[in-house]
Image 1 (tube, rainbow, N blue to C red):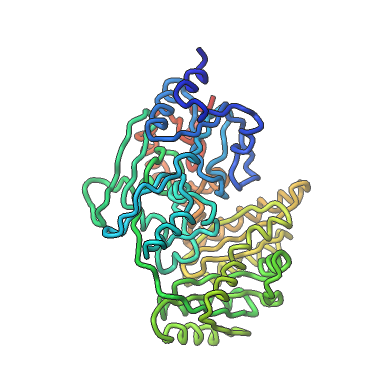
Image 2 (cartoon, helix red, strand yellow; image 1 turned 30 degrees about the vertical axis):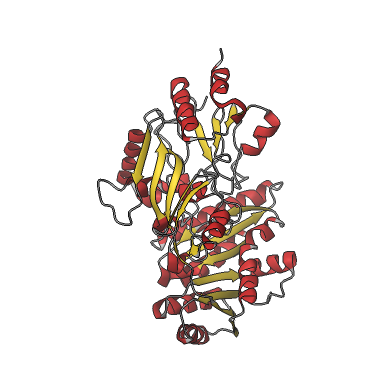
Length: 460
């Protein structure tokens, strides 16, 4: 009996070997990071299935690449040659919503948007809201420690994960954390697994903290003659109030979205700031208005109409798909200390000029997290080389300013080469030892985040 026949006895129709079907599982949204061909796609339905899969993979030394909805943009779910891609699409149930404890228990394949809707029906709220919230999974959000538009006030995915069930490479099931909001028993393995991109364990159940629904938001929109001016406005707003949202779109992103969706955006502005406050009264909004005026805003408007506010947020969420209509997009995701946000904007503009490359920048500006979206024609080798150089230059400048090469999208494969530069040799060595402790055979998502010294140890 072949190894795949052996696995098929356990997974049944949960094992896919049809090449045409597998092609859709080879990579995530980082199309530039072309995936290898998996030997199979596994679609487990339970923790027991994942255990059996892990034991089989350890026995046969086959790599396992975990996958949510494939919305990642750093190549974290890219298949390696000869691996088995583990898709959690069938483990998509909301197991419980405990209104008294204000928590939810979900399987990893639950969509972020579906959890939000289910919580809202009970007067509760799950805040993390990546731009792909309607189609991205909670498991994928946990794997990359996803953020989103409201994270400036309400935090990122890690701030809501109370506990995890996970399967190790040898099939052992571990539980970390629990249902308590405070728990300091032992090392914080929950935080270690959040953001580990499937390299340490396969997450099979997630316990999440919920919040009360926030009050209705008031929205402010302001335009500026320069990106640096919008950055100064953001820095002033953060010092003054706890805005619930602070987003920036540059002219390139504005023009791409307007061409795509016709939302009547000001395409002559160098930058547009979208800010929201869910505080009672008008004091916060007044301070935000003053900060924009002092930074030299060319236009400021406010609305308490929820529909108008959502329209502006739709424009922000459409930035990536709008730019993808212009060519292949490399999604950079850097963050810098907030006072240096204007300087980072300036340096990106220099990179655009020097590389002769189109970069549309959007930002979760309230926490210094920028997404410079590098657009290029993949059929033009010279243009691709310039785009890659620009992508890397953005990361280098973020590190130079004391920032990070990734704020919320993970390292995956596209940014692995820069990790040593940010972490340093001693920290990277510690990462390798942690990886070895969880996955001594190196079969879990090999080659992602960190590469073992020498080469990938498992894959076919």
